[in-house]
Each structure stands twice: as structure tokens, then as C-alpha cells.
Image (cartoon, rainbow, N blue to C red):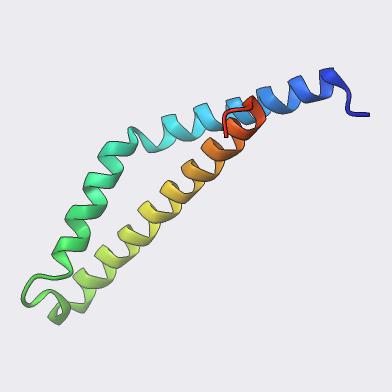
Length: 85
């Protein structure tokens, strides 16, 4: 049988991680707006001719998507632990 105290510790750990993640990535809306701006840049004329710049933008897109995915993962985990699926 799962111990109530263990569940409380697990929930607190998830909440701490979630809070930390939100603090580290800032507001999710800002992250989404930045991602949209960067993705729009990739569609502009001549974007791909400057490989150094295009690689930097692609790297930033990749990093933002990774942050967003971590945020969503912890948010889902937190909601499930809290009974808010």
C-alpha cells in the first residue's frame, strides 16, 4: 500500500519542479510568442542563405521547444498527481 506521507513528498517534489521550471523559462505565453517569431523568420526570403544565422535561429527554436515540452510534462504530471486530469 502506498504511504500517504510518501505521496505528499512526491506531490511536493513535483510542485517544486514545476515552480522551478516556470521560473526558469518565464511566462509560457512569452515563450510561445518568441517561438512564433523565430519560425516566421525561417519563412522569410533569403533566410537560408546565411547558414550561420539560420543555424543559430534553428538552435534557439530547438531550445524553446525543449523548454516548452518540459513545462508541459511537469504540468501534466502535477495535474495527474493533484487529481486534475
